[in-house]
Amino acid sequence: SRYFSAWMHCRAQFLGDGTTARHLASAKDGSTLERLADMRHFKASSALSNIDESTIRLAKGWGCQIAKILTFRKTVMSGSQYVLTFSCPNRPGIVAIVSSYLFEHGCNILDAQQYDDTGTKIFFMRVLFDRLETADAFDALKTGFIEIAGRFDMNWTMRDRDDKKRVMILASKFDHCLTDLIYRWRLGELPIDIVSVVSNYDQSTYAHLDFSGIPFHHLPVTKDTKLEQENQIWDLVKRERIELVVLARYMQILSDGLSAKLAGRCINIHHSFLPGFKGASPYTQAHQRGVKLIGATAHYVTSDLDEGPIIEQDVERISHRDTPEDLVRKGRDIERRVLARAVRHHIEDRVLVNGRKTVVFSN
Image (cartoon, rainbow, N blue to C red; front, side):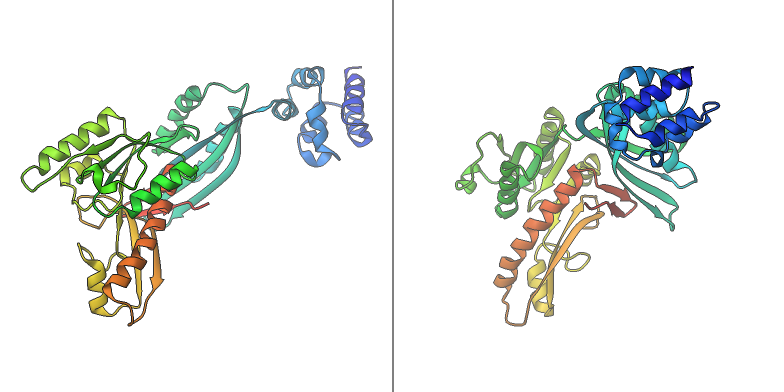
């Protein structure tokens, strides 16, 4: 009688789908219900959104997988999106365990990218997902993942995309990269919180820029005061809970100590297509060598000057007619777009460091 009742429920709820009703009417046990969890058995799977609670309770009473499917389809997603990134030694079962954990905790995978470095045998993955409104709290989801991360020796992060990263921008006299970042931020292209701008030049240098809503800190520096000035920068980083420092053509070399403190969260734009033409005057070097391409490189800052893991690069063709001034002018355009792309990759959790290199899961 209970199978006949189920037949009546499904006949009414599945928009008169007789195929589904016959499957249920012929059931001798719960096996047919298990097979119904496969959406290929439904002529109109969109009808699942109309299933009432009594049908779900009935399916739960039989203890079959279809109950999970019905509950998942019935419940509304939260609307927020989350990002999980991790790297770990490669072994079978990683993707299966991670995806199963997310499903069992009411999550729906929207996008997944992975890479297996066969040279280092390290596995990298980025997962974008949303959650059911009725799912456990996000903090509980993160806490529960700790066991899996430990089992696979993962270096991992899990973040709500609505939580904007707190960013500090360091700049010097050249302001094109600073201007571009602020412009993109005001347009909403870069979903970040610019918490502060720091410069070794006073604010009058940027009289044409609109700093409204952005605290400006003038921290002059000389060879004798470099350590003191860097301590001031570090104090700001700690006090303002800075998550990313961007060197927007900041023409000061960070000390080994500050570079180490900011490891993995400090991006520099170098006005050259690294590893060529390092140092302070790459465009002059390029002109002297008669190159046919110039470029720019955004990389993470390390204690090795201009040797940090590269995030983004771009180039532009030039000719023998271009003067060093032409190279500088064309280079400014490349630097702006390369730095903006690198910042975007970082804030969207698309960059995973792989030794001296990076894995960038582009969109």
